[in-house]
Amino acid sequence: MTTLLKQFPQYLHVGTTSEPAGLARALGVYRPDVLVLDQELAEAVGEDCGTEHHPRVLLISSRQHVGLDAACGHDCACGLVPDSAPVPHIRAALKIIGSCHSSKLGEGYCNSCPLRGSLRPPPLPLSSREQEVFLRIGLGESNQQIAAHFGRSVKTIETHRENIKRKLGLDNGAALVEAAMAWRRGEVLIRSAQRPALPGPAALS
Image (cartoon, rainbow, N blue to C red; front, side, top):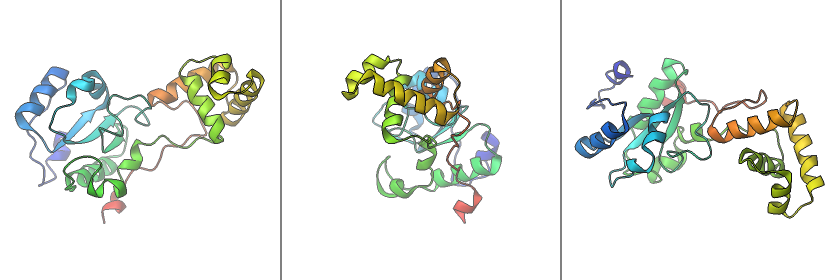
């Protein structure tokens, strides 16, 4: 990453850290405009990273999307690039975030920024209600709890579960629970879910 940053004249690399305390200290001392942040470090820092200074954040992650309960998610990061992404894609993401002139996330260019789509989970082949049930399963809720939440019968929720398993190619209830919990974490254990396309070099031309 340090080598890639040297290819951009708009970047002045002020430091590197792998510790939460070091990150908090660096934010206070250097007040960087752009923060390239490992997602695991972002989660370790959590709310302690919330200072008055709001750098533009590019997450580098081993996961396929930011997750639904991430400490640094849509309200914190501009985009996410998997650590397995080809170098041209990482370079493109760095160029996009380095060229941004928004003073903070959510202003100006953000709504049309191609990086924002990289934070969204890939689409699932489920109806809106099936997706809602899938997310509740990912919270560890039982059929009875889900039925009470939606004001439906347990039989209806059981039918939704069967449809979800069939559509996602999952063999049993245990696989369904594992996939739903992984989905909430940002991991994809489902063959039919494809990650959104990353911004490539063409996005910068």
